[in-house]
Image 1 (cartoon, rainbow, N blue to C red):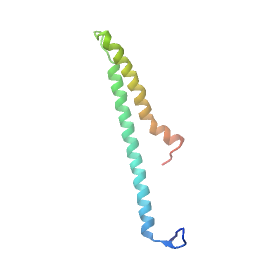
Image 2: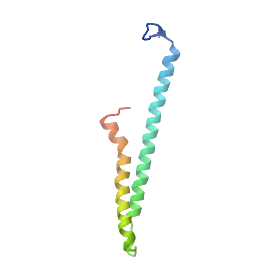
Image 3: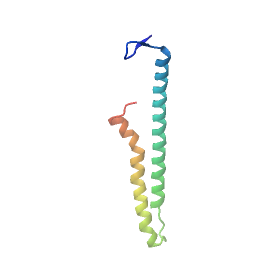
Image 4: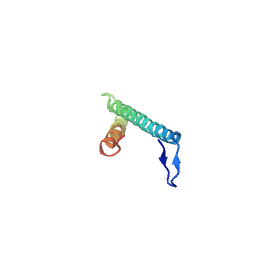
Length: 94
């Protein structure tokens, strides 16, 4: 099948195949990036839980720092992990 270019001349089949292969590669790389982003978010969530797991004998000067860092990591990890899911629901449909 020959496609008509902007100037009226036909585009070869190889160009169409190349464009489809490039589009397929873009979709695969976006999916891989989303998986890695979700994985990084889950790791941040786990790090936040580890920071919040304080023992009773934790010195008070480190307690506030660990709690603040733990909640910061929980918030950031949730935002990073849920970002690809929210974007796929509300806009970016691959």
